Length: 101
Image (tube, helix red, strand yellow):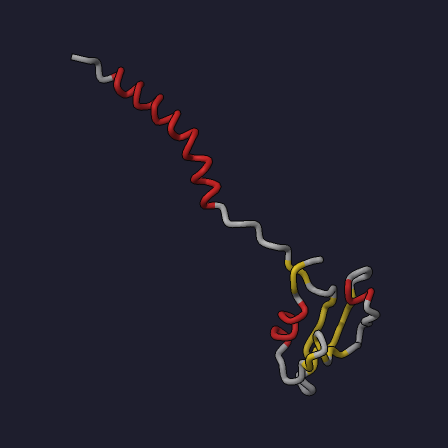
């Protein structure tokens, strides 16, 4: 009759060797792919409720909006040449956000 300790020690060692092979692969398989960085144009804005327009409150120095010449007080009328009339602030902001670069 064999000792109960011997099989347990063997199983533990066998499991460890198997785990070193499949565990890293399993972790990598469950890791989501890297997401691209999403960014905006470098503005703080508010919605003029009466006119339903997006008004730029602040422009980040050196950001895309500053390089394009946008200034505080400007009103966003178009994004990529398409009118934003009647769109909510959330809709407009989602149109100017995108992959950085």
